[in-house]
Image 1 (tube, rainbow, N blue to C red):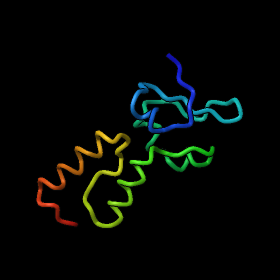
Image 2: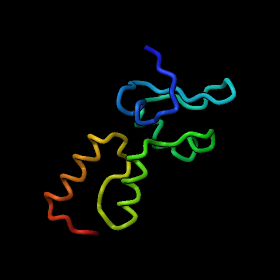
Image 3: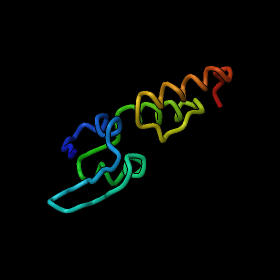
Length: 91
């Protein structure tokens, strides 16, 4: 199945492989994790990572010791649950 979308949330939830194109050229190709870790390159072509990724990065910047490479709500839920289970202390 081929899915063409600008919804990175949909891509993160269902895709096994991602191809990012711009001006009819392949810019990136890989798993969602491989592609979404290149946020700067995505933003250069008018895209971005899933919104949850930006939220996790903001938490990290505020001193919450969570991973920044989170791309789905399920991953974020597990990461935040782990943080809270460990006492919920900022780093």
